[in-house]
View 1 (cartoon, rainbow, N blue to C red):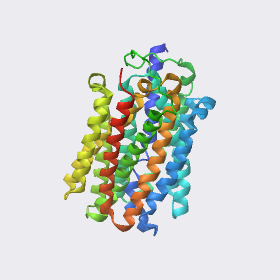
View 2: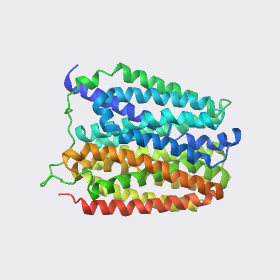
View 3: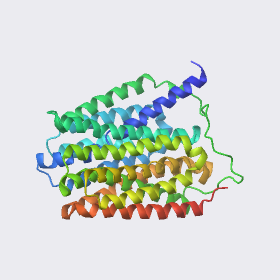
Length: 392
């Protein structure tokens, strides 16, 4: 196999790896309205369970530097797939809170290191188009999960059958990673297609421990916190507070993740023309509009429209900010900043859903306003980062 074909085959494996990250992400919020009454659990426990999983993901993310250096990206992707499959199959057998907490351990650990490793690899070796398409693959996984669950909830299989199917699918992806493991050692450090960014007049000098470095981590914490809170609690808000059927609510959540996925595919075609920074700012403002509409949505169609707007607005934020790291920071700081962003994203994902869980115990109606506030804070931090790390 020639070098070019090997490089793009590896890119396909990277896409599959990131799709496996998204596979379980959109499911828990969809099935929680069914799980907590069946297992006789408090509704707010979803936030605590999610927090435990994301803390484990953060731990693995912050440790990703030495994990990738010690084991290399390919084996880490393989182990991540096996851990995710184990967690999903454990969820299929869960009959109490202990099982649920036990299942998030392999799910959380499996996501952390591979997230930072794949983002760092693509940021260094591939274009902004491929970075956006990488995260579109996450969206395909996140969208496929609720779709499988919607089908399972509408049949006799229930949420347990849905998790069993997802676990088998994840095992299939792990087999693909095993069969292609040698690609990682055969592809050179510099892949054929380099990132298509212009060489700056003055190379960036910001280090990982600079104000910009920590601000970038805060931005990722905010973004993932708001995105996960939306995906986790939208179904419960629609079903419990607004009387929407569980199957229809699942389709709305699927539309949210589908909009993120479709938006990232489109961004891949235009990022070279419009620029990453403009797309990030415009996307965040679009998400804010959708969040306001979701607050006042009185019908299922309006709620779905609002979630689609939020998803489309969110689409460019994570991948474009990740791909901008080599433009904003000194070369020796890039992998550290990316690992810190991935870890901070997990910390944010653990904090805001837990706050939302506390609010859910009182009233689900407060969660949409929490989402609005999170998006406003995100926009302010993005604008500040652009000012302190100007493009050259």
